Length: 197
Image (tube, rainbow, N blue to C red):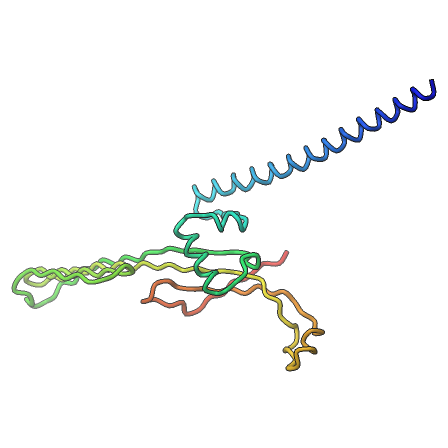
């Protein structure tokens, strides 16, 4: 009788242990699925509304075939950054269009004339209409990429001798690289502020 109780207790403890392990795996799997659902929902909202931030893992970014993501990956390669150091990327595609008509006081043109110039980044259409009208249509396309990544630096200026630098206190700072892809345009100044909470 005592032996049966002993085996019964061992059997019930084993079943409870197996159930506990299965419950733990089930909980972790459910937690992972919830995180993936939140990320997928967020990315769907980001694709519908442009002011919502996408959430990608490094594997997602590496596997992405989107043209803007390819440009970001190219810049990461040019900067020789380790992908795990990258914390944020920003891609901005903008276009400026200016249309204007100038009416001159004197007759300048004898006949109508049209001139076009440009490349993939800008186009300029000039239309001269006799006798005194000039129409200008200018389109400029800009693409800006900003990459934020973590970098370790010494708090005080680094010592000249490398062994002393090993023992200096260090901090992780976030560095931002901004690149304008339009060769006719340049980024004059930028400022990113991280709000601390």
